[in-house]
Length: 362
Ligand code: AMP
Image 1 (cartoon, rainbow, N blue to C red):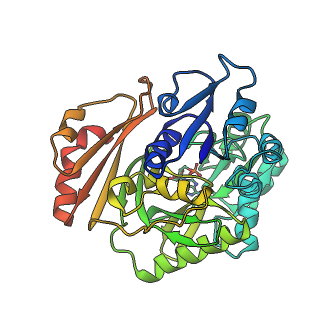
Image 2 (tube, helix red, strand yellow):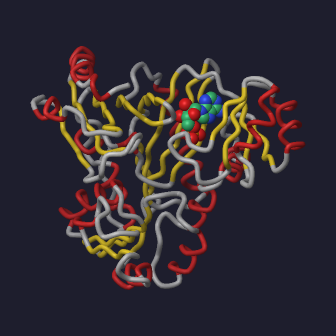
């Protein structure tokens, strides 16, 4: 099939790399002709074609997207001609933190206490009701921890409000977590569901730096609970494709932070670490193919992000159990330029391999 991807970044690039062996073709939309996915398929770029979205739609048998910040009205229009997966409902809910939290409440999925805030008076009331510390976040458009203000004392109310002015926002109670986890799953057109194991994520300044898969010392009940939340969400949204849920592990169990209707940075380990990668499973799902087995191949995998500059990539190239992925992006502070996957058959091998890559970690 011809798969059209709205976006042409690293996620689209890795989708295409996984989809060619299945005899699919790819087209991408983006601003310029030199985006990370451009050489992996037909590139429909604004810089040389004002009707680039229409051209992508004319090319494609099915459309998907790389970002939850994709315009829902545009997707509605596209859906009249070519089916878009994941569907409008998944996109509409996951691009707005308030809608997302309302769905968690409706489905009895635990999340941080929250209130939507539109004015300084709302914020004062929300701080009073929720307590501090709390995090003020933009309701839409945030990524990699951007658009957030951690409030520790009531003197910061005005400063926090002014830092967000003009946009809709949400105040969330601070969750005292032990660690951050994520769960990636895929739902097919035939309602089949497959789950990857919970993974453990370490962030620095809001950016993911390290994923360990599977997360260590996870009680099977915790995996089961996370899968139950996931299944409820997948079914409620009639989701087709990959869905990611980010969670906090706390003394009192799992608390869901947010979700993304797409392949996710914390699933990149699955390219070498699982029988079927998240990218291949997304492609299989949206093209109506049977889903692939999600079982890990090794006892452990890890994913180290390459951020801001390429760094000493030869270290990874000289390790028998490491795989380097570069995304053809220009250097820029805090930008995701690539990642390295490690596979390991013991905890010791995992720890020594991560230690070898310490130059890539903060
Ligand atoms: P987000 O954009 O919601 O994924 O937030 C970015 C990061 O901020 C998360 O990965 C957490 O480390 C932290 N964070 C976000 N929300 C909360 C919260 N309610 N309580 C504690 N930490 C949070």
